Image (cartoon, rainbow, N blue to C red):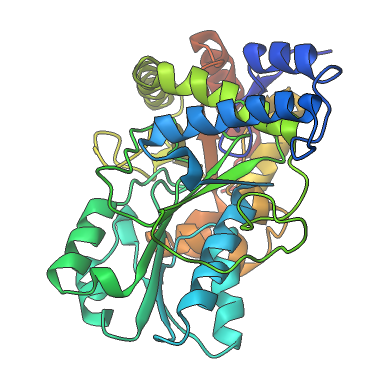
Length: 389
């Protein structure tokens, strides 16, 4: 197999060596249904509970506040539709942002069709408009849903400011606050004892676990309506036989990532800064969509504007050379000619032309400085060959 330089970790990550080792040790031995009433089932349930404990500890919450799902998308859908169903008699207004992942944005559009009033707060330059939030908070609001780290720009939204605003205006006990933390979890600190929100969505495959496993934190005193019915698993909140191997892997991935959160962040910050310096040196016409010195960005994600080369053209050029980046969210990237695929960048403040020329580079602990050198050499070569003036 040819060498790959994988710089698309915001889309998915390589399973870690320890995750793969754990799976090889358990996949053929621990296959019982954890809900079975025999000792083999109890043995598997212990492994499930261990992962639940690890995840709960990493968020500083109770294990029984963690609901396993099939993905971050399902966790977002459960949080949104489940809370709206529980609270709809109290109001019909929901506040979100115009920069959400499709797994939040599309459910909001579905709720609009059902008569709910959806307010999409501005996120220009990667900041939520708090004045807009203040102007739209009233007795009808039942849910606020916003991501913590944007998956295309790396912008970190100030959730504490949102919570404080809601509290100061006297609405905190009248609504639920949900956060999509898929790009934040185990990359920046998320302490739910300090962050006073009600629900939070996370995903395994973004932190070197497996695809097909996510989780929703639901604060103990909050009620939502299940969206999948059947055998009553996960305290009746998410029926379905548990994806035990995915859950084992999730726990192991969290254990690794959380224990090394600060070490990994320091390395990623250094890799990001190195990439920026090399781009300025080798590709001076590239524009950085982010402010590199801002404290409000996650350096796991770098957004670049190419000079006179469309992102799709550069993507293909790099891909042939075994270098993999993206032009945005993998969940909307295939709809590259649609407004949806550029929605986040347009709302960030780019014009359509600039959005069409934007590449997303996203890092993981497995990337190296040597890989960055190869990527930038290929990027420079591509600009020279492909630019249309």
